Image 1 (cartoon, rainbow, N blue to C red):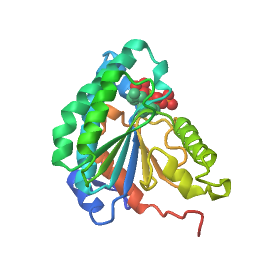
Image 2 (cartoon, protein in one colour):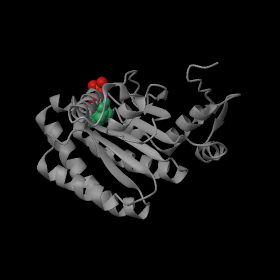
Image 3 (tube, helix red, strand yellow):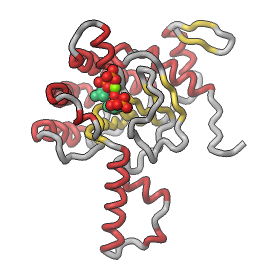
Length: 253
Ligand code: IPE
Ligand code: IPE
Ligand code: MG
């Protein structure tokens, strides 16, 4: 249940109706956190939370697409997540490999373009093949862009962008004075996608965890205590409804 001004509690369909009365954010980014806690609370191994989390990811893709969100970025595996126990890392890798294949028919039916953002280096070959296959198959789709952040680090992304720009300078294609915000943005993994309007983090942590550091300069933040496997359409509608009530100022008055 969510609150709207005047503290009237809204159900899912009323909330959806409300969300539909105003423009939806063009780009929504999500830090999908809390799978481990969800499982631990149920006396299950952490990996059970990751399996359940895949279902929430599928639902959020469908819901965002149906609402007309243009870009959805999901944080699936960070460059720091390699430090977890090896069995957990292996499970996350095989879950990604399996689900990316399973989702291909629906991505095609929904005209969704998948792009994986992060470093390819270090990703197991089988996972990389799956990513390449689905990325190529959906490359011509013209509907929502789904960015899956996998082996992603915001600082890695900046390092890679700086290296790319420095390479262009070295080759005489670019002068240092020509580096501006726009060129830096375009050198990032997200390329010419607009910056996120709304960043959602589940499971209550008040931190960014190395996600989209450059792109979220003026993004609206929304944190919920809901654990990722419990996140559903109602939660996405609540986040968007609150976003629609906010006044974005971008430093102005
Ligand atoms: C998010 O859930 C999934 C990944 C980071 C891969 P966690 O696994 O971080 O779950 P918690 O935060 O330990 O509950
Ligand atoms: C952020 O969650 C990364 C993903 C959701 C993939 P973490 O669970 O890794 O973040 P911290 O460790 O709590 O900052
Ligand atoms: Mg976590």
